[in-house]
Image (cartoon, rainbow, N blue to C red; front, top):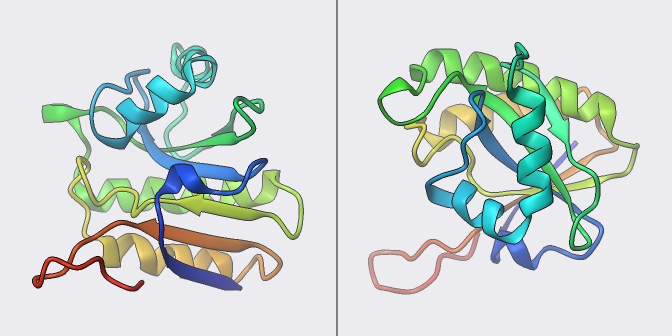
Amino acid sequence: MTLIHKQMDLFDAPKRSYIAHACNCVGVWGKGIAKSFKEKFPKSFQSYHDYVIGNHCLGTAFVCEMENNFYVVCLMSSVGYDSKVGDPKSIVSATTLALNDLLQQIPPNSIVYSNKFNSGLFNVPWEDTEKILLETLEKFPEITWIVCSNEVNKEGRKNDT
């Protein structure tokens, strides 16, 4: 099992990488990093939208076909967004299922890049998501997961993560 924290922008991941983010189950990428995904990967957004409409997708992972040299990974962790976002406990539970689903879908020795998913608009402390990510990766020792961060510390410098 390998979990690495790296000071970098998620969208600077190497070409042909899996880049993952948490998604709602209503087909909307309207704010936060999801909005950036929608702008950079419009075909992936349409595939995600089509996947969630009319399906029970909470707790699943959807891997979009390659677009712009990346595989966009949608971790279905919240039933909705804004005022209809799930509570943190249900998001963590759905994320556990989605991570297991994803890691069974991708080939061994894959590398997945993500942000600190769930910790933004879904209001889940990163430590809670990181804990289940570590627990899940223990079952898939051949997978490497890189958490990308551009955070700035109190002194105004980027953290070395």
